[in-house]
Amino acid sequence: MKGSYWFKAKSKKVLFEFSIRRNITVIKGDSATGKTTLLHILYEYLRIGRQSGYAVSTNASYYVYIRDEVGRDWKDALYPLKNTVIFIEENNEFVFTKEFASYVKESGNYFVFVTRAPLKMLPYSIHEIYEIITDGKRTDIKESYHEFKEIYSNYPIIENNKIQNVVTEDSNSGYQFWMQAFKNSNVTSSNGNGNLIKCVKELGLGDTLVIADGAAFGSLIETCINSFQIQTERRISLWLPESFEYLILKSGILKSEKLIQILDNIPEYVECEKYESWEKFFTEILITLTADGVEKYSKNILNSYYLQDWVVDKIKEQLPIEVIN
Image 1 (cartoon, rainbow, N blue to C red):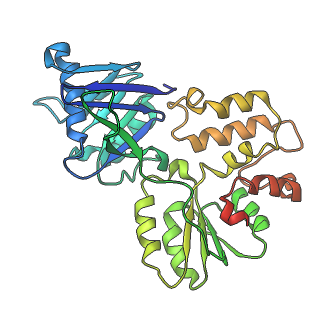
Image 2: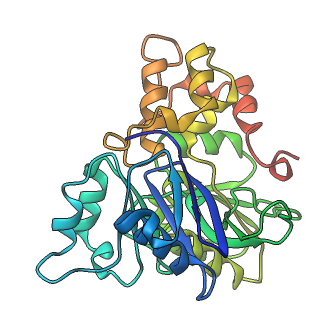
């Protein structure tokens, strides 16, 4: 399953409009923010159609899982589904299990989770974590209008960060690049995104820029932000591009019309049954595009081509302007 899918769900009082772009989407938020209402509309329309009093328009096949039924658990309900956007209500504890995580990665379906707790078993993007907001400016409709708003941005406020330290989750090619790009800073690898908080704490004093792959950082972002905010003796800024490979692809150092087409409409090219996150997709695209050239890319050892000054400068142009300056 690949591509973007749009939904329009309405009752006499409310209207929800939103799009799903990746295989995993998370809807967060406190009570009374519309999450339960949205799932109820989708569920009832799926069950009895117009007799429900609701209307749902979409370009996707979808399913809503509320809870286990007598004699039928989540596996009975979900395993038969293919190429389907599956909405799952919070309070279903199975979503936190390894078994369910394996199913998500292999099923070829898209998933929308309504949950306030992070899904630590799953690699999902910071850009697909939303809250439902009400837009009071829509005067062209009679219903209360609700839409998804992205909670986290990959461009934090970095002003006044002297970047004495740089911490990257990558221990291979990405780390080798940042060593070159930030020659005047202390660059450290945390050897994985799960070690970032510990690594930053152990650095001691000094303003710090933390770089991690946003495409698979969704379950960790809230914990990291909370940890960094309480360390008030220094500035800690978190920057989360999709991945290091994505920065290379976006930099323009590779000339390819096909690459331009892909980057203009990424969801149409990422088959979720093959790629559990966009991070994996970007890595494969980069390796494939450079396989026969001087730019040949390896995730383990960085080709010296990418350490040339002009290449480093082009890739660094993707950084937030506060860092470049």
